[in-house]
Figure (cartoon, rainbow, N blue to C red):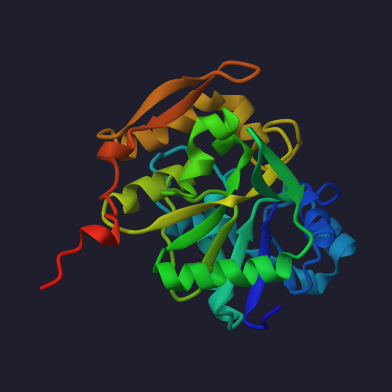
Length: 284
């Protein structure tokens, strides 16, 4: 794996249960990796014991909070936005050109492919090559960040439509970034949706590649991380950060999964400028 790249696993309070590092190891990743924690994490020493001090990077959460636009006055420090924004500063300080920002709850990284009429999955076991390809995609596309899909992107399987699109105008969870192209995430919760819709409406590019997918442990089933904040306020408050930022194209909706829950719904026709097929270009 190239030397100017590293994986940052953003984590808090889960020193004994970072699923993502196990997924990376099973996938054959051989490059640099670090746990990014904050100085308010009671598990800080346990992270160092479990993963080695050289693999743990700590940032000042209050300083990160002071720099962030949380879109509220709750003074809530239980949010991943601070680690997301600080990751760019950390990468620059380390002399990295690229980095991959991951949450700590991925149990697998899979290929997704059509198998007859079904959307099938197969665990990826050559992550070095895949990550290198994603970095080339990042540079060639000129995007702010590019990402793997999530399980929720494939509701409905092949008939759901997203897999057949190949590329989606969004980026969440697994973010391939350049250190010299910082993204200013906003909002205590739903910071990724708020950011890719707000900046996307201004012509910035955010892409999800549907050929790959991160498999997450079900939301709110793990202690630590953002779980306490979600349980305390529910997904209604989480969703409304994005509604506040982009009321022209985002509304509160209902997600019908195993359990009904409040979720955001994006009207993409009103959200981002369109990318026209090259065949429509006029040659002068």
